[in-house]
Length: 151
Image 1 (tube, rainbow, N blue to C red):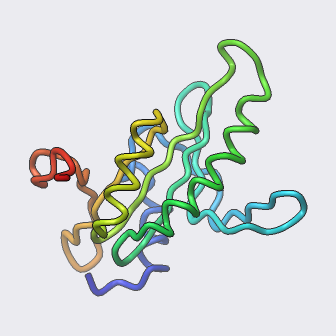
Image 2: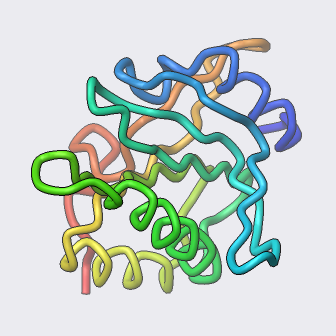
Image 3: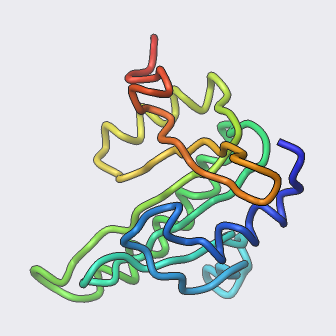
C-alpha cells in the first residue's frame, strides 16, 4: 500500500459508505478534550443509524498496536458519557472502527479482551483495488481467513 495515511483518510472521508453504508460523516480530525486538556484527535467521527450514535474511526496505515487500543478507549469513554446523558431507550454506546493494513499480536489480545466487555468494535483491512480506489475487508471475515483469534 503506497498511499500516505492522509490520502487514505481523504479517500474514506469522501467515500464514507465504503466503511459502512449506514454511516454519516460528521467531522474529520476531531480534537478530543477531557477536563480542559487535549487527549487526542479522532481521525474520522461519524454518526450511525436513526439514533445517531457516534462512530469513532481510527485510521492506521501500518499495523494496529496495543497503544492504539488505549487511544480509542479514551475516546470511547468520553463519547459514551456524552451519549448516556439521556435515560432509558435514549442511552446508546459508541462504536469503534479501526482501518489498518495489519494487526499486531498484542493488539489481537487486547481486542479480544475488550470484545468480551461488550464494546462494539470492528477491524477493517485496507485493500487497494486500483491506482485511485480502496476497499475494506473485515479482519475477522471468513474470506480474509481470520474467523477467530488463535490463543
